[in-house]
Length: 168
Image (cartoon, rainbow, N blue to C red; front, side):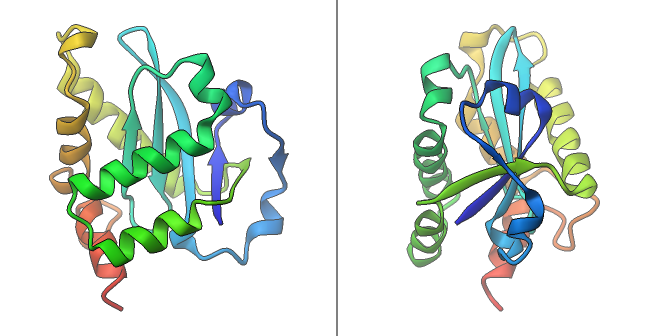
């Protein structure tokens, strides 16, 4: 099960119930995420970040129908992210299996929200001056996971932190 802490902006887009965050405290941190709607070049984008590792995914230009099927959009996009980052197949299968059930709660981690803001600012600076059609989502997602240094992570970049988590 994935527990996604939805910001108020995302809650307004969802047609799903927002569960009590306290009910899911026993879910491992690796299965807990935060998500927010950000606007880039006048288009709604979803920024999803893992609470434990900072692994993140930005989905550009989401439309209303995609919000109606957000669970499957997230799972499919995570699968693509794992392929992009060349995540070991066993780990990818484990994480995608956990994504079969997704519940949405209110946010709970200020640290994760801070990381999310760092990523948002980096994305905004990378796309500055570009038309929407010129934005390379693959390049941005790869950069934000492999090259972006988040000060609050032990391994400094999200992908290394994610990989190190599974070495335990």
